[in-house]
Image (cartoon, rainbow, N blue to C red; front, side, top):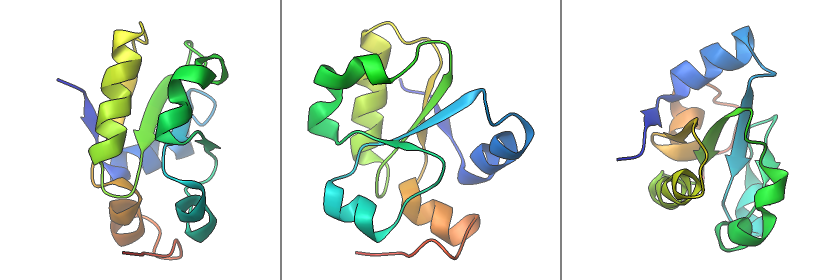
Amino acid sequence: MVARTSPEEVARRLAKEPTRLLLVDVRENDERATAAILPSIHIPMNEVPDRLGEIPRDKDVIVYCHHGARSEMVAGYLEGEGYRHVANLSGGIDAWSAYVDPKVPRYT
């Protein structure tokens, strides 16, 4: 089972140890244009296998999408590829907007 982390925990860790974390946004381009958690890198879900080299193995990787379903699949894929420190952002960017940063737009 893929590890999960809350938006509040990610915010705390970003404030405390920003260089240790890497947020990976696996949503589509139009979703990213609407809202994003920064800093993060953007690799749409279907591009992850071809772009693994952009995801360092020495970071704690937090994967996010809109609500958490796609990112959970990608986090599981990364674990299968040997990434040891991967977690899914519970509730995705929608939860981030609701519980951490209301300036990040919510969308449907």
